[in-house]
Image (tube, rainbow, N blue to C red; front, side):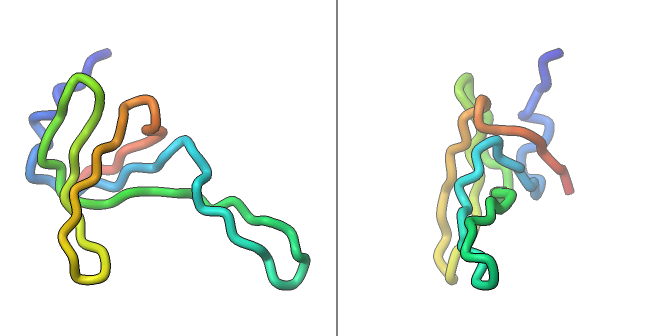
Length: 77
């Protein structure tokens, strides 16, 4: 199935990533914990290779390009 991402432009989305980028240490056990990593923002573009979202981090506007192969799940708001 092919999804027309353009129908969701301007909507807020949460993208859960396949990769476990967020690795933190558990202070009690001293072992690493893999956090579920997601990106949130407004969908501004849909391209052949992935999605472009606008987001804010520490009061700064940022643009994030997410390749399709990195996407595990998308929530639309």
